[in-house]
Amino acid sequence: MRFHAPVAIGIGAAILFVAFLAGLILLGGRQSAGGDSGPGTRSSLGLVGMVHYTVRNADGALRTSNTVHNTVNDAAKNEVFKRIALTPAGDPYDAIVAISSDSDSPSNGILANNVTTNLDGDPDTAGSQNPAKGTVNTLFDSQVGAGTVQITFTAESDNVAIKQIALTRNAAADTTGGTTGISSDDIFSYVNVPNVTLNTGDTVQYTWTVTVQ
Image (cartoon, rainbow, N blue to C red; front, side, top):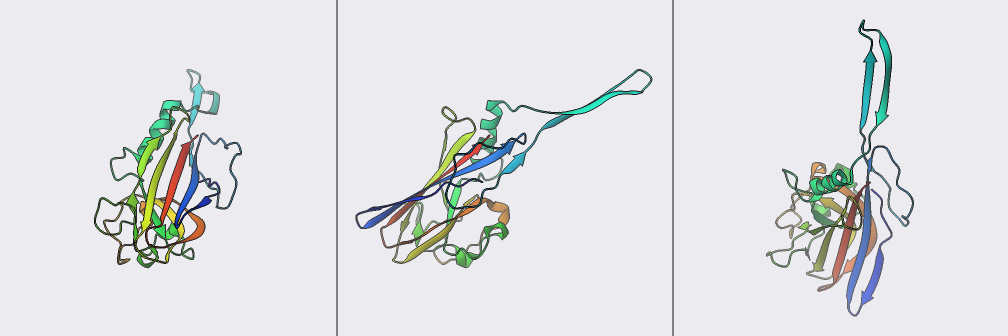
């Protein structure tokens, strides 16, 4: 995934922390062109298509054999994004989890005691919802294959720390006690974010952009 530099803005006694995180899915082996900067590890998920063909004479003798690469239609790129975050048969990757530690790689899953507690991403549901399902929007009219997952977390106590976030599925119902771990099978991508400490009522908003190119 590609990650753009987060931006922190102080607003009164609250903190509005907006992180723009862009992901690249590589189709047909093409590299994306520039435009990203800031901290974070760049990686991409390769979806490569090709056609191999063989032509033989009537007697079976080989005439020619070769491989050609395909072109992916825009509609197909849009469909790939939808199958990631909107319409898979199982749970989509439409939840974001805030993590209080940056010493444990989410590539192996997220330990229960590293999930940030006293942080609520769904005010309409009782308890501190982290992870929480975000709002998914497609950007197909302006950017083929692109869409966002956005979440706003509100601190429910003082000294609530966030050091990493991950885009996940199967959002847990309640992690107030730090009792819910997240399997690596349920994690799409993750990133270290600039450390932020929230006090009661402070908010942090993340907008995660995934682009299929």
